[in-house]
Structure formats: structure tokens, C-alpha cells
Image 1 (cartoon, helix red, strand yellow):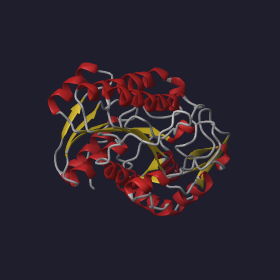
Image 2: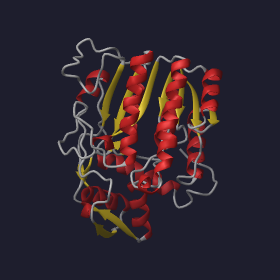
Image 3: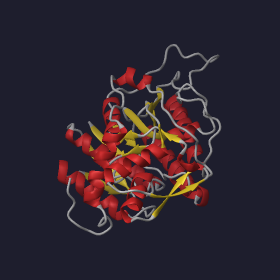
Length: 345
């Protein structure tokens, strides 16, 4: 199939492009290479993908540029769209809210409009476990309500789910939303804790452990995320004939629309996570214990039985193994991460 992947130079996007190409799909990538973090890492990811699987088309386009998105759809006519581009980060949204409106709302509207006017067989888009917000009932189920987001980032992700539903209902676009849970692995974002913690431990500088390290995260290794996406591509959602307007299922619809959690389903305390990083690095962290940050949820844990039922797959790489793979990459890539160099797989 011809697949358009937005955010193709991002962490999940680059891994997704690599898998799709290995599976024989024709891939068109889109990324704006913005400066939320150093664009060199994004360029290095693209180079890594090309070294591993060959060249692919990559358009430097901003999601908020409606005419450029329209022109891309006219030119490429994708059959499937995997929409991973977004302004990420919970804490960044506290000080830079408009970046989230431009990318996550206006940008997603441009994707939906293009899917409307140039029909696709399946639109898969990234949501986030952050939509569960103040909900403290774990494991989080796609059947749960998500009406109390704790950050603007989370609010935009919930808005994406609602926007997708309206377009699915009005224009018949098959839409699958994926709520990712704390994705980690090689080529991850430098604003996320694996790289931040690994660098601090390696350099002997203090790292900040919020909520005194007592909250839990459901870490999900990148390969498990990509496997789930790969299996869902050719399974566009159908209308749920059992959907009841009186007792509506939040994860399906009378439209071709659905939601899935993708999570490791084995949450661990941040203290345990840090101890594993120390083990793989062979060094001890200098820790600054701090209260929970505004916008952060306390604990996360995915209930992902719907995903297993639909795909026959559920995340299976344990945190210890996944962090070992991550640290092997980290040692290879840093400290020369932000200087042009030959990139090894």
C-alpha cells in the first residue's frame, strides 16, 4: 500500500517508516523538522532509516500549512495515513500553549480535511495515555471516561479523538486512535526521561526525580508500538452494530471509528526504572527528589485486551530488556548526538 507517515523524522515515526518499508509498503514521509529539540537528531533518524531500508520520499511540510498538506495528498494519493506528527510534551505546554493549537488542532484538521477530499482506506492517528488525566482508576480502559485532562497537551489529544469521530461519522473516514503509554527505546526524544536520566547518570550530574520517584509509568518499548501499528494498518474499523446510543461505548461507534490502548501493562515505580538504568550504565545516579509536577498524572497502566483481540498481539518486551537495548544505542550515539557524523544502525 502507499502509506503517508506524518512526523516521519520523529521517534515513533522513524521506526514506523522503517517497519513499513521492510514490509514492502510504499512510504511517503512528512516532517517539519522544527526546533522543539535539536533537528540534527531528526536528520540522523532519517539517515538511519535510509541506511537500513533504502530511500523514501520525505516532504518538509508544516501541518498547519493547509495548502501544502492538500498538495501533498493530491500528488501522492495515499491509501493509508499514519498521523504521528504533533507538538509533544506535557510541561512544554505550560509555557507554549499556542504551539499545541497550531500543530495538534489546526494541523490535525488539515489532515482530516485532506482525508475527506481525497478518501483514504484508513487513518491511524496518535493519541496519548495522558487523556486519562485525573482518572485514578487503573488499569486505564478505553471504556473509561476521559473528561478531566490535566494539561493542554492532553486536552488536544482528546480533541483529536473527538474531531476524528465527527469526520468519521460525517464523511465515512475509517479512523483508529491509539493511546500510547510512555514509549521508550533507541532514537527516543531528548526531552524524555530515558535520555535525560542516562545523560545525567553518565555525566555525574544531578537528575530530577519528581513525586520523589513514587509514581508509576507503564513503559512500552518502541518495537511493541510499531508491531501494533503494522498489524492494524489493514484492519480499518467497521461500524459497531451493537453500539447503543443509550449506553454508548466510548471506544467504538455507529461510525467506522475506534480507540485502542497500547501499553506494556506492567507499570513500575520511577525508582525501579532508575535502578535499572543505573544497572545497565554501571553507574550510580545523583538524585534530586522533587514534588509531582503540574500536568503530570500520578500513575499509568494500560488495559489492552481490545488490542490483543483485534491483532492477536500485545506488548511483550520487558522493561529490563528494553532499557538494555536503549542503553546500547545511547552509548553508541552520545555524546556526539548533535554533530553530523556517520550513523550506525
